[in-house]
Length: 207
Image (cartoon, rainbow, N blue to C red; front, side):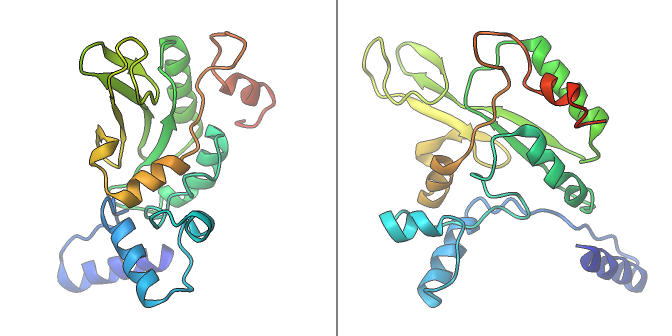
């Protein structure tokens, strides 16, 4: 990353043009290039190598310089590992935090966002819940493939990269990635409306 930034600075001096170092979204190529590389070089490693070898699931690469989607469900571990790297980009980049539940506690969400903004330097992050929609009964939190009321098939929505769309419209590699995703949790268990970062802050991890 440092080398690429130096090259960009050199090109800018030589040409007078502005150049960005950006994290590409790779919505389609993360699967397409992994599939083509596997055909040409069967021993090459992909993000879901073990699942592909054992179950034959479609292959994909991790997106840009993001962590593997199954690496951690700990918000602050993800941010700690990505913070310095993300600040090296001069253009578009983002850290996605995927949430498998409905976000009901607005106070907890505000506190989480404030904590991240005050303790990290990364330029952009998203907090994206997964939800489902029944054509008859409407919105449902989380991944629900069949409506519990009318038994209709639902549409499950999640963030693919820069936007939210039905999972069934994703390519097969991105669907395999979704199945591997570790979902972070905003709320502690036992029915308490407390953001998960309270314990981390008390332990001084962010100080």
